Structures are given as structure tokens and as C-alpha cells.
Image 1 (cartoon, rainbow, N blue to C red):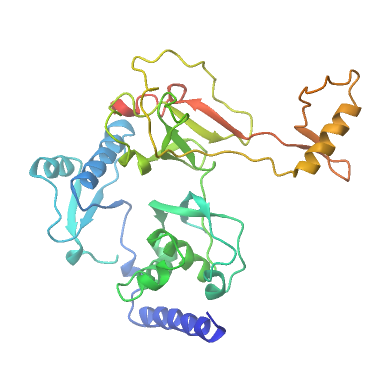
Image 2: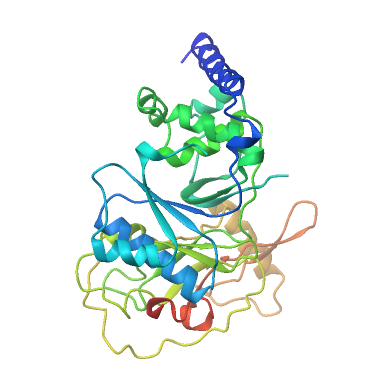
Length: 346
């Protein structure tokens, strides 16, 4: 992609936003009033997940927020599900009826980063950023401040353009971040990196994560994103779907570690091919580790026996600063968290 192509793309984006502003699409009357939740759903599975979310919000968290559920024509829930959705104050809409309605935006992190050689950095004129991509299962946006970014995202995802933009993205989720970066806007992020929700016991494959567990601004669990749970074969039923999480330990944990208790139902015979997990790799090279081991051994009163491991978690930098290299990940039990212990019963 040459500089002329990049320039043409930038002119197209700027031109679209100028036209949208001239048409009044960013005016105050387009912001909408009040607060609420917007869902998209298109088949029995997604309508059921929306219903589960509303049950948790209204019954478990006592949320008073109204909601709207958008779908395409011909996509509708069963009569029973519709009645349940409406019992929580939800309004069902089809897209033909839909109207576009300091940071004041929050994105929840994904597992990935955007590569430094991705053309998007040239297109939007921003140096590669050392930050996580965001996931779009949920986003929080103040339209009075950021309607221009939503309009630019919509422009990118138009049926005549989305194939081009999807060439260097992981789908529609990235369009929101690209638009915010192109307009030099910033956003808030949760108080802790995304966590991995997992089966309560190891399988034949070991630790088996299958969902994203996404935190709120204080780092407390807030959203459970199904991910691979939708792909796991039969055998994972209510009461045996969750039980542990692998999380980033950025400071002393407030969780109490509990030893694994015997399971009421063994999972070791369940072989799951698809699992999510995170691991920490020591950033030091083998030469640096060897030097750290030699330095640590030299400072010990009793030299280590041959083959004995030497703790090199703490090491000194060239300027004398002590640095801790320690696995920041830990596995915690859902039973220790008031927000999660009754999740499957909600």
C-alpha cells in the first residue's frame, strides 16, 4: 500500500465525517436520552444468551437499566423467550426500524495485540502502540462525546467496504478502536487484564479454559464471554462448566487459595481439544539466566549442589536496581469470589 493509497483512504474518512456533520448526524438530538443497554441477537442461541444476561442483571445485580435487542428481519425468538425478555422490560427491534441513535468510553481487552507491520498504523497515521486489542462483546460509549467515532466505525463496516478493512483486522471489533485512534481519542480500560474462566478440574489436556472473564474498573469479575464454551462437545453441564480462573497477579492477591477438593464428578476422562490458557515466559535470554544463576550461586553461603535449582527470581540490573522476575499468573477458585460462586445458579 503506497502513500497515495493511504492519502486517498484518509481523505475518504475525513470527507465522510464532514458530510455526516453537515447532515446533522452528530447533532445533540442524535445523542439520545437517558441510559440503557443495547444487544444484538439473531438465532435461538444468541437470544438465550441475551435472556441469561438480563436475568443476571435484574435478579442478581438488581439493575434497573432498560434494554433494546436488535436483529435482522426474519430473526426472532420463540414466543416463550420473547415473553421472558419483555418481562424484563426489553424492547425487540429489527434493523429496518433501528435509528443511529473525558474518555467517556470503555473497551474491554482482548487476548491479542496488533502487529507492528499492520498497514492500519500507516492508514490512521499513528505509530504502533504497545497495547492490547479490545473485544466487542460489550462496549461503553458516551454518544454525546464520541458519535463521530461510531459513525466512522459504521462507515468502515459498510457492506461495500468491510472486506477491505477486515483484511488487516480480526473483524468488526477492531473497527471501533481504529476509529478512536484515527480521531485521536482515548478510552478507559478495566482495572485488571482479561482472565480465563475454566472447567473446575483438569481434563486429559490439563487446565482447560473456555471463556473470557472480563473485569470492571476495580478489577472485579464483571462479564463472562462464552468463547470456546460454545465449541466444547457434550459432557459439560450445569454445575461443571466453571470453577477456576487464571488471572494476572499484578499485586498481592486478595483471594484465599484453597486446595482442590474432590469433585462430585470426575473430569479427567473428558478430553477437550480446544482450550484457552495464558502462560508467562521469562523475558531473559538463556545467557542472561546463566549469568543470573552464577551470580546468585556466588553470593550463597553454601554453594548449591550439582543440579540444584538456584532461585533467580530476583536479579540486579546493570545500574544496581533489583528486579523481580516472577510468574504473575495464578489460578483462583470461583468459590472464593462473591460475584462468581453462585454464577451457574443465577
